[in-house]
Image (cartoon, rainbow, N blue to C red; front, side):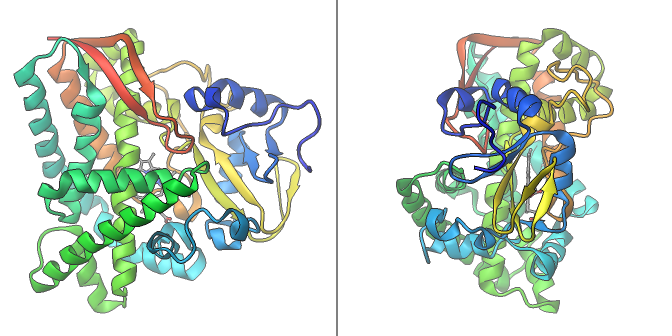
Length: 407
Ligand code: HEM
């Protein structure tokens, strides 16, 4: 196996300890074997300099069909609705095809369009906080009561999806997200394919009703774009599925992990509460400290050299954001959670032409949420045994976080 010399540490995504806490293993490989291959031939890149170079490298891209393992390790069921949908995502395309879709969808996420989403975010946050305040519980799972419903409500409102179907939407999206995990199994893929079909049916209904009468939402904006360029119905529905899934699983993770970091670092919690101008840097630090997307994939289109390793055409590379974000060559005292950290060149939104299109929306959501959560509670810590991580590798997220709020 090239890149893996005997006795050097390697990453094992299936290791339960890694899934619970990836940082010790990431620190070890970053120091001793920063770019290496596993038994399946997947390459891992863990240093900040190598990850940032890989993310924007013109010979690397996101089209999984170019990966030599695709036929064998095909991540979705062949010719399934899910596969047909994912293959049309801008996220899965490169070059002119990617640029065309990104340009069309980006019109719905300009700084002005995102600023106009603030009212929807505030409304969704205020509704959830009011429910929590009405109950004034002594212990509270902030994941189920706030971090999970908030981003789904926001993205559903932004896309113009009917909210009465919220539970269905959430379940389909979670099932889909699981199939995107590098360690997903056949049964996940079957469930995800059914979920993709159901979600697409719902989105087609929304598109049809917006064709009849436009509203103030992203679907209407994309239909207006369609008048000029030609987004086929399938392309449009696929991008909506992407926005729906990408638009909230990661944001749920950011809110949950951010609350955990604040609960575990009472001095930093107090510092942020006393000085709200630290809000933006605190959110960047939460993104750095617990990257919601722990792996960002790239396929090698033409041989490249990354971190001194030659990596051939057709190989799959996982850029480990959690490794890059705690690289001591770039971040002073990287294990420390510091709400005032500056500069903070984390890679949690990926990089290059695929840099997260929804980053401004995610940042705005986080800003509104943390402002309100810090105002709602005088303080909070973690209840004993209150932290449960999901058994995921890519989407690193809390299953539950039980807090003890001070009212
Ligand atoms: C904390 C929240 C979020 C995180 C951590 C996150 C992270 C990411 C990452 C790592 C990528 C891949 C970038 C790459 O390959 O280099 C990505 C892409 C993307 N994200 Fe996000 N994301 C978040 C929120 C959102 C939201 C709210 C939306 C939607 C409104 C969104 C829409 C997208 C889209 C459309 C892409 C594909 C862009 C492309 O391929 O050109 N994301 N995101």
